[in-house]
Image 1 (cartoon, one colour):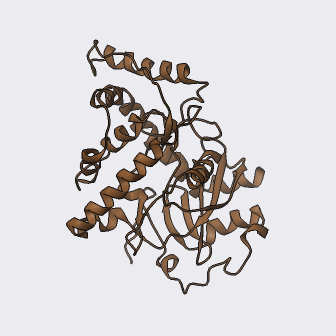
Image 2 (image 1 turned 120 degrees about the horizontal axis):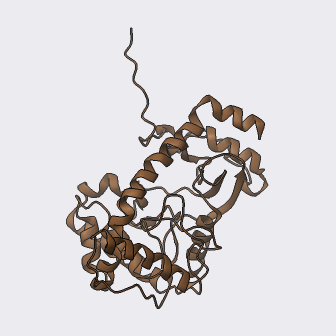
Length: 319
């Protein structure tokens, strides 16, 4: 009898045919703007997958297009990508369509979809170790240039583009906010800072947060979210945590990444930032760490359960 191996719901999987340009993709030759949302949603489940993890799926629907679906994808992600495409020279996938289907379960009882460019490149997390020193240096230069350009984009509001809850390393997996303005955001951060002081995770002398500017911040710049094109051009993907935040949030997010490969350290070495502001923000991470790690595990379990258990079909049939 063959040995049974249970599939790990938290392991990234992909279909090799998704990377083959000769695959018969379901929407090849179709006008993407004439395809109904219901057909797109159905195809997102069946087209060859480039990336699948815990209910989130990126599927290739033609030689030039992919569709992303996730219960954690909110309208703000596509809006951030459009804004950055319009107002910077940063390389990222162009957004063609985006929509939300409600009543699908999950944290927000919805599933978001984004139709965007397929980028012919390799994930930096898969090739970083094999790059030559000069190639690594060029990658770091491009990343730092991206961050500098994002931080030149000053925004007159706080949080995700178009509104909604904030996501990222400094917020709950369920989202924090929405924030009504600077004072509301400072109150949120200072509340966590006081918790850190009470628990001994930061000195009681640590000054309160006082933010003077808000810029475009990706909040998740890491090798897993960078695609290296054969030309050497770097593309930044996964804008789900992006929004208007203080500039230090980008450096802090990079600093929080595991740095076994030296990527984060190399970026921080070339990036200008206030070390005191970084330490101040990092001090509240210990307070958030336990709750967020617990939340992430719980969220992944619920996400997998909703998509893979028999009750998912029952819930969908009753919606």
